[in-house]
Image 1 (tube, rainbow, N blue to C red):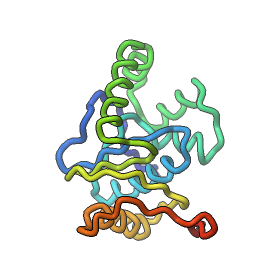
Image 2: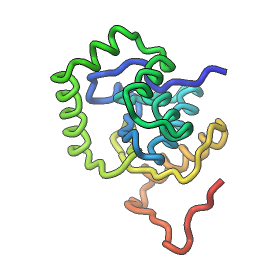
Image 3: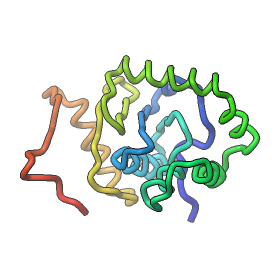
Image 4: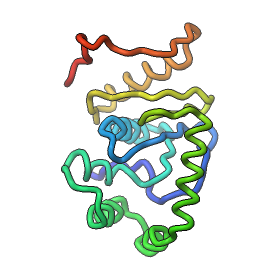
Length: 173
């Protein structure tokens, strides 16, 4: 079985194409990994997501297989994601370009008000941090969770925060 990839090449694009959900991530965050896995399942079903970096292979290396974020892990993830090795090496060695991309990503995140990952920015502009306690690769479950998220963001009730009581945590799968 081939793993679905969210993105296969790094991009300097700072906004998502029309009708595409933009995803802000942090490679160290397990909640972001679960969100990227959900996006991968949905993308396989036709949803459009934009990540600013190749990520699914790197997230899996870090969070599923417990590998450190070092040069060997990054190279192996790039190979698994089928990145062009010459372009990847050139992009990786372009310190000025990497810093400029990071600066744009941080500016975009600040403009939106991103404070946690994953933060999904819908094509219509709504955006929120979505903390995933559970991982799913099941298409029906992913669709149900995504539809709930989108409904909450677009609902006329204007729900701004949902946070579970400390003594009543989310059920873990």
